[in-house]
Structure formats: C-alpha cells, structure tokens
Length: 270
Image 1 (tube, one colour):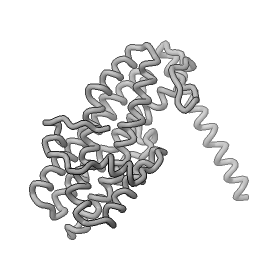
Image 2 (cartoon, rainbow, N blue to C red):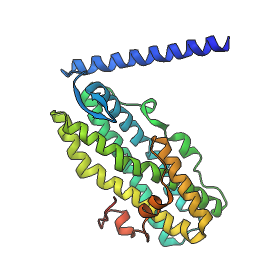
Image 3 (cartoon, rainbow, N blue to C red):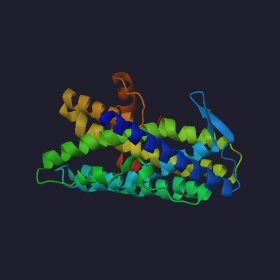
C-alpha cells in the first residue's frame, strides 16, 4: 500500500508541475514571447525562455527570502555581548543587507519575472522557503554567548549562499540575458552589474568581517565550524564545498572595514 501511495503522490506532483509549466508557457505566449526559444545553456543543457522565466521566479523569491533572516541577525548582533563598535557595525550592515535582499527580490528579479509573465513569485518559488522559519530561530535569548554562537553559525551559512550567488548564479543569469536580445534582458543585465553585484559583494564582506572579528580569535575548532557552516550554505544551492585552501583564500587575512561593509569604500570580492 505504501508503495502504491508513494507512486500516486509522485504522479500527482509530476502532473501539478506539468500543469504549472503549461501555465507559465501560456503567460509567456500572451506576452508575445516564444517559450521554446533557446537563449543559452548550462553544463551542456539548453536553456529556453520558459526555463529562464522559471529561474527568474526562483531567484526573485529566494532573494526576498533573505530579508527576514538578515533582519533578525541585525537584532541578534545587538544582544551578543560584542564590543560596541563591532555590534554597531554588524547591526548596520545586516540591516542594510535585509533591505537590499528585499530590493533584489522585488525590484530587480521580481520585476523582470512579472514583466515576462504578469504574476508575482511567492514563497513556494524560493529554494529556501520564505525565510520565516530561519528567522523564527534567530530571536535573541538571555545568554549573550549563545546569541554570539548563533550569530556566527548563521552568518557562515548565509555567507556560503551569497558567495554562490555572486560567483555562479548571477553570471549564469547574465549570460542568458546576453544571449537573448530583449529589452527586459538588457535592463536586467544593467541592474545586475550596477546594483546587485556591488551589494552582493558587500554581503560577502560581512561573512569575512564576522569571521575575523568573532571566529578566528577563538581558535581552530571555531574556524572549522565556520567552514562547515559556509559549506552548508553552499550545499543549499548545490555548489561543491570549499576545501580549506579555497576557504582561506576567500576569507582573506583581515576584516573589512565598516566603511567597506556599508558601501562607503569599495573592496573587490573575487
């Protein structure tokens, strides 16, 4: 019975996915677009406009999902017993990141997704859910040391996600846009270059800042835990884990300045 039930459930999921795919194709056709037009490829697999549309929906919802956890991290930083300068810097940086994640989800990828199909992406599109579950576990407690431990762990995971977005996801979307001569694609390339990548680079700098200010001074065991948290974030986007050499190169030798974290000074992120 269980096998038959699982088979029925799988069939239902496939049918629902196929129905959703046809609705997406219909919305694209209504916009005068050919959903089967191939605009690029990834790992040897062709990407058509319909697939690109689906990618944009996932990106819009996933970026927006980062708003709640980063908002919570900003508040957690104030309750972690940190020196005032570090606490203030992290509060401002994560508070700014929260607003930027919402902007990426709504004003950049969400707007492009809506323009192509006339619907707004929801939490069901996100690869992380809507972010509320993560945020609910980030409420500060009465123990500053536990708040700091939680801050460091989640900062590592979010940093791992941000690095994958910066190094792999955004370049993929940019390549697809460049392979599709359409006004929405051209506008999206410009927004990624001028808005999203600089902001995402600063989000990676927060990951570095937390490491050098909170993690490295505590010794090798804490460094290993931060690496594991970073790789946990990468795993969520099906990216390979960092080895120790790559992690050491990415993390750098010193903490970024507060001005770099808040965008006052530019700092390159590879």
